[in-house]
Length: 377
Image (tube, rainbow, N blue to C red; front, side, top):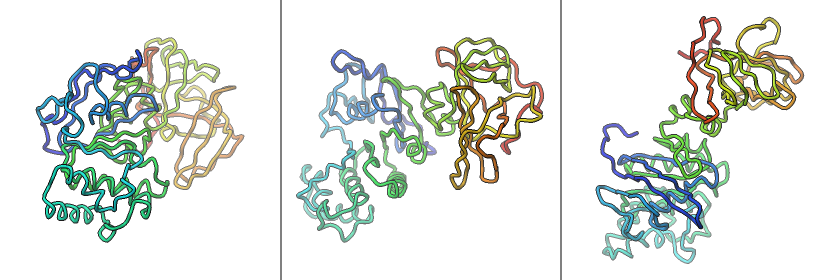
């Protein structure tokens, strides 16, 4: 979050929304600070785009309040909410030039012609499109069209900038570049920004704070480190960082996985039926299987070894129909068919009960020797 900011600038309180008798937003509450970049993240159908459209005023709320800078805005039409919106498809006017697209909102507000020209020139410089003012959208690349859409959205000096999957129509080679440009522009202008995406890498690289949604509710909100290191549910653990999720029953330090080898955990827990174990691929250490009997971890067989440049990725079968993904730094030299032992430290295992709540260890690993040294403090 931006340093030195304490005021709650935008607040959504107990927001609900129904479509055809189905609740799509369920008692959602979220506070956003001025100048903060918040990303709403989740799978298709989780309610993130509906939330953005309710903020913009394109979709009404069934109940709850939306407070912006001390004013309840939920009954205001979109043009009075002082929000700039960048659509997934950019929605540029095809018959207007770059300059005319950027100037549109200012003209609707009847700004003086000289002020509009000055503002358009300022924004063209800001988004690095000076010299493109006379071009039509069809004469621009996807990345250039995105920057025009951004310039048009911020031309009116909105209190909040709303971004609806702004990178989804860009080629893979452009996505990172435009993501950096958006983030730098947002920080330079101090824009309070809310972005919707289903891409967790995109979200991790851009946000001050992530809000993971599922079934119309906020599953967890926090910084990238919060959600990655301390996921509140197996859903978050899987969605942020792609954890391995293994189902089974837990008794002490023994996790009896469904259709897999028994897993000895690094910590001891109270008995838990029908629970889930989450393990991040890069936190698992792989070694030859010999000599590890009785230690925390599980034995498996490498089915697939893939070189990815900075890392190598392995698919390790630990049961007839159960596999774990393991990601190692380059230098590890394991091959398909090799029998290996997988282990991890106590801090890198996460257990969730049948209600998908975190299960805290009853007893920590008794000895530091049981934990794997990963080079982190």
